[in-house]
Image (cartoon, rainbow, N blue to C red):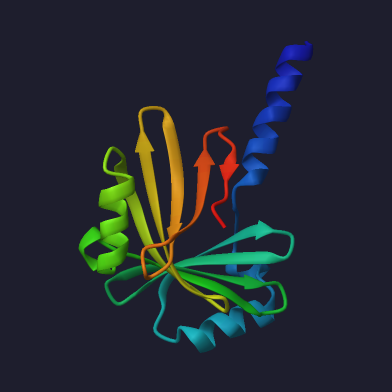
Length: 155
């Protein structure tokens, strides 16, 4: 009896670590207002509650897939836009070729936040997956290991 309970607890914790889908009606009005003002042409908005104080909205703007994150009082935190490898700045592509040539590339995003602009690239090699964050000049700002691996910050 203890093992099934433990498995259920682990599953519940895993599910809560990811964004929890919420209906637009459950999103605080200041968050919806900030999103509508920033992205008036957004379509197909799907909301998630990332934490108790953060909301993420995934949407399309024209042909682009994007997401934006807001604090629960409407403050903009970041916007992510999906990219193709060819759209990355040359120094970022060069850094990937030099430092991560043996990695299989996954999702690529341009991230805009109050702190500035960065580029996130998901990579994997065998069982090891990570997200690498680059500055526009190709400097590795952070490596975040996934699937139980430790974070490795290169600050």
